[in-house]
Image 1 (cartoon, each protein chain N blue to C red):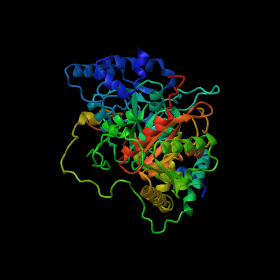
Image 2 (image 1 turned 90 degrees about the horizontal axis):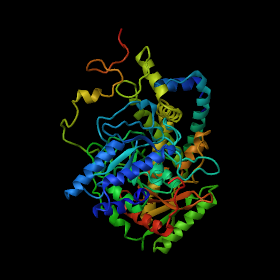
Image 3 (image 1 turned 45 degrees about the vertical axis):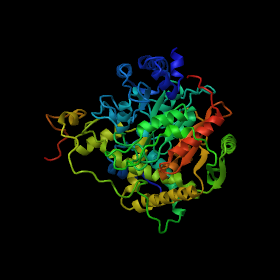
Image 4 (image 1 turned 180 degrees about the vertical axis):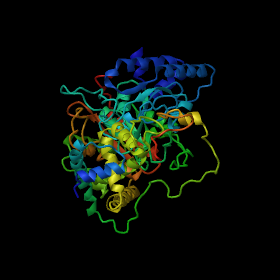
Length: 490
Length: 95
């Protein structure tokens, strides 16, 4: 019974809760048991079992009175520990937020709660969402449930690695993630699940611990495209508390999933065929192209000429914004304080001890590129190249409706690999970063297995606020790929 | 331009980040590598291109000029590391 309940999709659990086949408490308990049995994955930083059971009981009470709140009432979800949750410790994967218990709730989690969703706990992540392997967390790395492989534990990807591992290992029916340069899509690819980064402005950033404010965007991580559509509809929407939140209507994303791709124009960007691309990645990409063609889509080449400059642009813009955002961690108002004789010493001691190596590196790079004498050469230049990258996409979308690419250049690698050189690690995001810089919606769909038997995803990119077309095409890929492999630990 | 130890020290001070002397050389190497890598942007012709500060609309939304939240001293101080009475407390800054 337990394992059956954890293997449902959100859509099927919703229908069965409505039909009275089981209660929200039973569904929640099954997932809490699974979480308890999967602690070696280290997917959760904080488990909120009591809270979850209480909210599940409230959900059952509502349903029994005929007052269910909607499609998510009683659905157990995991929340990336970057979303502030009222009364529940929030860490951002960092030592510097020691003991921080937010007195407020992020807009996205408040919306999920108002829709009746049950929070199971807060998932592990790279520190301040900075990383592609979930190895920079103060709370230790997360293990990918698809591992170990060749005797080594694998990374789940990052930064939403705990959320991706939890969804893949059937510890929750869905999870929230956040994506600044690929942090939803790359772990989704590594763990064999669906993850969508919506258009910048689609989901409110209020109450999400800030990394790079012009790039950060929340999104759902699920085991089906339909589930991503259901969850996204509840997470999205205008919020006056986020000045960059878009005042656009939220469509019925789930309805888009069934629409098919006949006549849809799909672009293949020539510049993504990078030197040294693994043949299995290129093969899967061509397979995806063929699947969409067979489903009735029209395929054509497009050019995104500034693609090769996207990573360098990102690694100026994101650290610059991060160095500014992370200035707030000063040991005065919340979190860790390490004493010093003077105010400056207290700041330096607190920040020196509270931030891990990757965060320190990015703060220093960001501080440097924003400092007097270097601002124009680095930061302003990067903002101009960013404009060219966005223009490339705008021109491509004059010709096509959606763009198909691989999600990541490889399958999941071993914990500890790529750790010696920061730039090698940054290359993981080569296919996801351009979308983030342009603020466009992008989804990763599990499409096949690598030669080592590990999941690989394909990415679909759409026009601003056209998640519906992205989801339509994603559903077509999902149907054709028929990805039904499951992880060893799930 | 490669960064040296003294450059790392001054950037770290700007960022109010304690960096131990023993870490300076390694950090100088890593940061110089990253900077050298991002310098590839110099080859892109950006003449006449406006810098992109945000993908959202250039005009910020306006809202009614009214107090909508705040004023809760207990909530504001609930996470303070060492508050004194109703205040955040820091080391003495004025002699």
